[in-house]
Image (tube, rainbow, N blue to C red; front, side, top):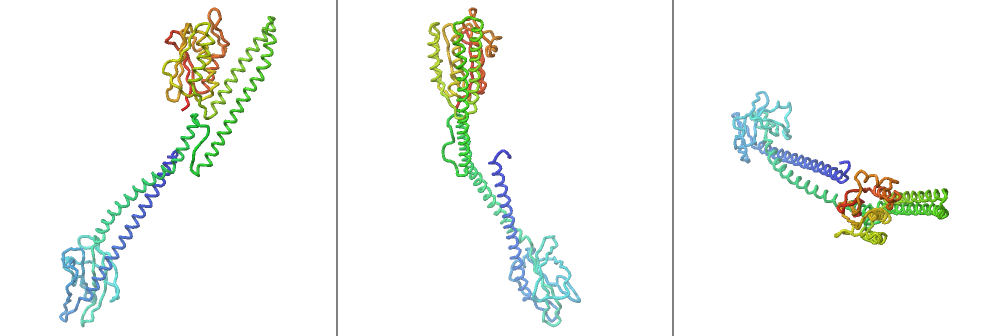
Amino acid sequence: MKNSLRLRLLVGTLAWLLLSIAAAGWGLRALLQGHIAQQLVVQLVMDLDHLSGSIDWAPDGRLDVDKQPDARLAQPLSGLYWQIDRLGAQPQAGLARSRSLWDQTLQLPAAPAAYLAQGHSVLQLHDAQGHALLAVARSVQLADEGAPPLRLVVAGDKALIAEPLGRFTHILLLALGALALGLALAVALQLQLALRPLTTLRQRLAAVRAGQAERLEGGFAQELEPLVNEFNHVLGENAEMVRRARAQAGNLAHAVNTPLTILANAAQGQQTPLALLVREQAEAARRQVDWHLARARASAAVRATGLATPVLEPLQALLRTMARLHEERGVTFALAPGVRDARFRGEAQDLYEMLGNLIDNAGKWARARVLVDLAQDGGMLHFTIDDDGPGLPEAERARIFERGVQLADTEGARAGAGLGLDIVRSLAETYGGSVHADDSPLGGLRMRLELPAAS
C-alpha cells in the first residue's frame, strides 16, 4: 500500500467513512432506544396515575380496584403488569395485582421511610421467569379511615423496548449498508477521476521517452501545471546539453583530424621509415578519434529524450550506396520482401554507422549476394544481414567484434582496420542492444543486430 497513492487514499477514505457510519448508526440506535424507553416510562406513569385514581379502601378492610382500560393488563403474562403492596406495620406484597401477573408477585426493594403522594420512582425489576422489567412505583396514603399506606407499581417487560428497537436496527443496518456501498463507489469514482491527470501525465512522459514527442503537450490540471512546466524545462535543458556535447565532440574530432590529415599528406609519397611511421600512426590516431567520437555521440543520444529515427528509408539508401561501392565485383544488395518501416530509438547518424559497417562488411565477403531483413518484436528491432560468402568458423565469430582484430583472405584484399565491428558492438551495447554472428541460410555469415525501437 505504501507504493500506491490510489490505494492509500481509498483505504484511508473508506476507513473514515466506515467509522463515521458506524458511529452514526450507534448514535441513532442509542437515541431511539432512549426515546422508546422514555415513551414506555411515560405510558407506565399514565397507567400508574390511572391506577392511583381507581383504588378505594372499603370499611371492611378490602381494597377495591376499578377495571383498567389497557386490555393487556387482563391478559396473562402480556408483559404489562400492576401490583399494590401494603406497607406500614403489617406489610403485604401483592395485596392486589393485575390478572396479567397470573400467580406471580413482583419483588420490590424495601419501601422508603417517607411516602410521596405526587412523585414516582423508576425501578429495574425481574419477574419470576427472569425477564427484565422497567417499573414505576409510587407510595400513597388513602384518605379513607383505617386505610394503610400503599405502594403502587406498574411494570412493563423490556421486550417492549427490544422488539421495536430490533426492527429499527435491522432497517438501519440495511440503510447504512446501502449508504456505505454508495459512498464507497462514489469515493472510488472520485479517486479515478481525480487521479486521471496523473495517468495522462504518465502517458505523455512515456510518449516523450518513446520518441513520440519532445515535450509534454496538452492541458493538465491546475495543480499539475507547475510540475509539467518543470518537466518541460528539464527536457529542454537536457536536449540543449546533449546538443552542445555532440557539437563539442564533433569540433574536437575535427580539430584533431585536421593536423592528422596534414601529417599524413606530408608523409604521402615518401617511403622512408619515418614517413611510413607517420602515415601508420596518423591513420591509427584517426581511427581512434572516430571510435571515441562514435561512443560519445551514442552515449549522449541515449541520455536524450524524444529520439525516433525511421529505419526503412536510410536502410534502402545504404543498400543503394553499397551496390555502387561493390559494383565492380557484381555483388547485389537486396531488402527482404515484406519488410515494414519501424523507428529506432536513437540518432540517425549512429544507425547509419552500425548498418553501414555491417552491410559493407557483408559486401566485402559476399560472392554475389547480400540480403537484409528487419523485424520488430516488442520493444526491439531485429536486423539480419546475410551474405553468400565463405562464412566464418564458429570459434572466430566472437573475435571479429574485438577491437583491432583484422580478418583477411589469403591475399589480404579484404583486411580492414579492425575497428568497424567493434564500433558496431560498442554503439549497440550503448543503446542497450547487441550484435552477434551466426550461420547464414545463404551459406555465408549472418549478422544479427538488435536495437531498441521507438513506439
